[in-house]
Image (cartoon, rainbow, N blue to C red; front, side, top):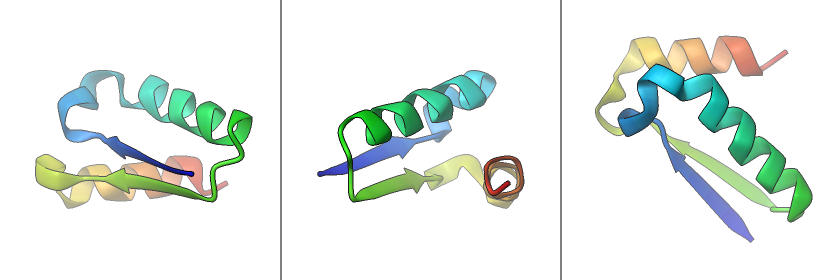
Amino acid sequence: MKLKLNVYPIIPDMEEGIAQIFQKAVDNRAKILEIAYSEAGDGVKKRILTEFSE
């Protein structure tokens, strides 16, 4: 199973959306979780990698 989250339309509540998709990936034992940044830009990508890489 592969899950994908596009963060561009949910930037204001990005942390909540990412937490939900992570939980869904764990619950469904997804092998791949893809986070698409599309038009969000490098700042958003760095923020996600910093906050969720711990």
